Image (cartoon, helix red, strand yellow):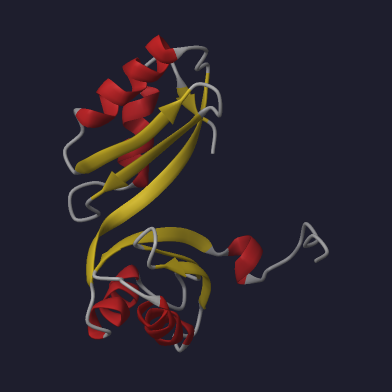
Length: 152
């Protein structure tokens, strides 16, 4: 597919991304059920729902839909949303020691359920968290308290 132009307003380019951690996904029928429910909501573009990873990734328009509506759609399908996952590009990570500094800052933040990875090779930190206790901005701020900085 062709890349979107810079002025694209479609959800694929301008939507707010979110990845939900979903308990109870065991088969394709489960993922199809959640995908169908989310696709019925105006202002939502489902990226992927996977029973293998237990994740539902999507983009949404916050002017049209609220996160509570998204999680309610998943719960109404009979599954439990256990958290969210966020990925951050982090500058300055050159070795495992640098990654450990960032990981320690993340683990200390209330609401962080798991630091899936902090990788100096990819320059990424992936964090599972409880959105009732923290959010992407607070996680980024925790990383930024170290000498390493979030760039996206």
